[in-house]
Amino acid sequence: MKKILFLLLIISLTGLNQIFADHHKNKESKLKIPKSWEEYLSIKRKQKAFGVWSYQGKTTNVWEGIPEGIEYKNTFTSQMSADGSKVLNSHVMKTKDGSILSTGSGMETWDPKRKKIFCSSSGFDGGELYSGSFELIGINATKEKWKYTETVSGKTYEVMITWKVEAPNKRSQTISRSKDPDNSSTNTFTKQPRKQQTQRQGVILKKGPKFKEQEEVLEAFVKAFVDGNAEDCANLYSKDTIYMIPETTVLSGRDAVLESYKEFFKSRDYEILEMKEPVSEVINFGNWAVIRGTGMDKIRSKEGDESTKNYKWMILSQKQQDGSWKMKWDIFNYDDAY
Image (cartoon, rainbow, N blue to C red; front, side):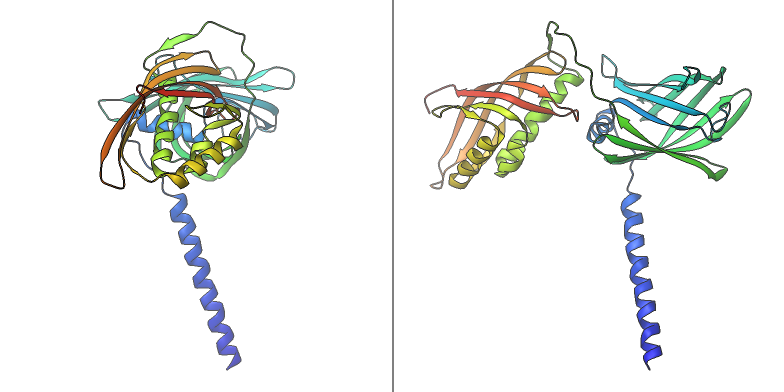
């Protein structure tokens, strides 16, 4: 009898392990094809994929034209084009003595006719010209998978490339031959700190990707404010923020801002019917930006009376090490004595 019970226990545990494995597999496989360029860029920003990434290690035989077993450093750069219509990528693989094993560049853009992401690359592997095209298999906030077809020295072959977010400043890249999956390599890239930029004149923006970055901050704030989420509101401010609002002394630091929102939401006794904070203009200074705009909130009191308040605001925004934008200064005032 004990043997039977022990056997049943093993079967049950095996079944549970399979269920958990299947759940994990399903979770990992939830990659999707973006339906627009804007959706694709939004996912890339969530990945914090833009920037300069580097890896040091030894070459494998996964790439044609590059010898195996050579120590090298790979520097990969991904950034937006000035007009926001393309993602520009480049790489350089160098040995310790400065010899270039591989170098190339490429771009990702939206093909409106085929309604999909188009990506290509070209350069030199071992001094031989190569060219290749990418097909996006799927992408989400932590992972993306591509099928890459390359031609070099008259030979065409195919590899699968998977990028995975491992940490805020780490991404792994797994490359495997489509016809020989066991021939694969996984490298972990580390994001390099942004170089301090020299002071420059601000650029006035009323559209484009840098304008959109600031809009996303305000959209996140409006949602958190309507939801009454003090933590999400405060997380949009820098640690050393200065918050200046009507009829209140200046608040210094994110903790003070958090307590202010907690107290405000706890005492809020009306319903927000509608709230907007459109961005009117952005002056971009690289890692700093000044944003101004207007605001409107329509509310309903406990007694059922509806009213609307209009206001204007100005924000000094600072780009953080992880690529996100936080409010350094925030000030607003109403259009009337409500």
